[in-house]
Image 1 (cartoon, each protein chain N blue to C red):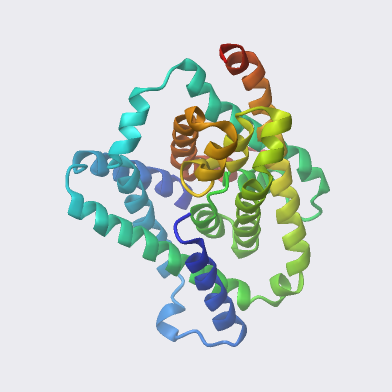
Image 2 (tube, rainbow over the protein chains, first blue to last red; image 1 turned 30 degrees about the vertical axis):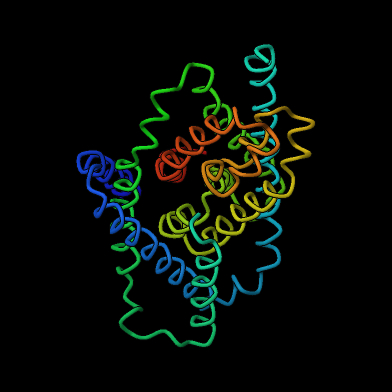
Length: 93
Length: 203
């Protein structure tokens, strides 16, 4: 199960990062590794999208769905933040 | 979130390689992306675990500030659930998983494409890029109508870096530390929330 593995590996990383947090050189290497792993994975995502006709053909629909989800998450989070702001933050100003 | 242009560039390069069938055979290995994701998860964890600024900020939080990322997560997931009725080929679970990216498009899209497939991966990539762009553009309006936490909420995980300047500009510098705290918590939770939603929730 990849998803469980993802979570466990992340926690292992957190622990190691915390233990070796004083080594500046390590941090630069980690940063470099994170960036390139992400670049390559997005390159792979591009490949698998590019080689699937059905995704390419529905790209405008996918874009619209993505946009609507973005709007939904922004409005949802902003409304919840508004409730919290009224409740706990505004009176302290 | 780092160098977003480079990230999009690599995606487009891959897209072109896929369309014109220019993929070198050693890259076509099915297991390579999975192994790479595993390496990335360890490195991303190490990156956060070794962040001294993060621990300095964590020491300064109180109950009020702790509630900020919790409300933002709840709002984001509820908002995504609400619009899932408009999606004709995405399930409730898939829509919420995309929303759980919290604007952290690089990591969320690669995790989702591994766990669910390239189509949802692209939705996650685009949706979370849109969240960042919309935040950069609409923070002034959101803050005016929804209070000073609105920019932090809209920015999600990006409130700690790319959208921080615009948040501080419109909510004030006293909200900067809340923005960074909330951004750190959300950045930390994205790789946990997505697998949780995609694999362990039953919708």
